[in-house]
Image (cartoon, rainbow, N blue to C red; front, top):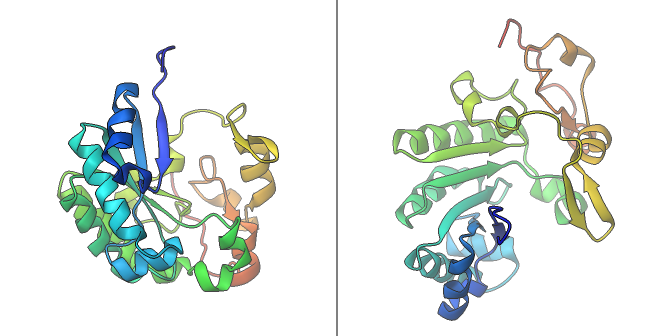
Length: 231
């Protein structure tokens, strides 16, 4: 902050339900990205595995916005919530948030351990994703999507694709983790994902990171087709 960097904090916002803590972050000019996975209290609490989490998060968001803190919403798309994804985006808009990131699950941690119970098929969620993107854009929201290969995403929403938004190489981008430094290129793109044989013929291949290996192990490659032509 003191060096001029923009601070971005990913949070469930429950701690910010205490006004003193929400007020305390304001001086850092931070952007808080809040996990808002469902507009339905019962679904939200199940996904958070904490009774009462929904109400705490909503209070936290209200306190942050009341303090003038920049807030964005991250919605992880799972088997629990994709059937009301549009409803959740409308709820987020009503809460005063105009910046939304829709994220297909990364198969790590609980999502890897409980893959069949948590991670849906792309084919099942795409209609809801497209509807949510359309509604958000039509209502002036900043919409982004992550972990959905470009070959599956409707052409109208490629501008929302996180992989298209990242400029240049991911080499040298590190995140601190319990195991030390995390290199997005070597661990996510090279080790965790792969491209199918036909991907080299796809016009999106230069920008596409590929498909998570665990997804292919569980659901197979049949959904994916190379898209012809230039970008």
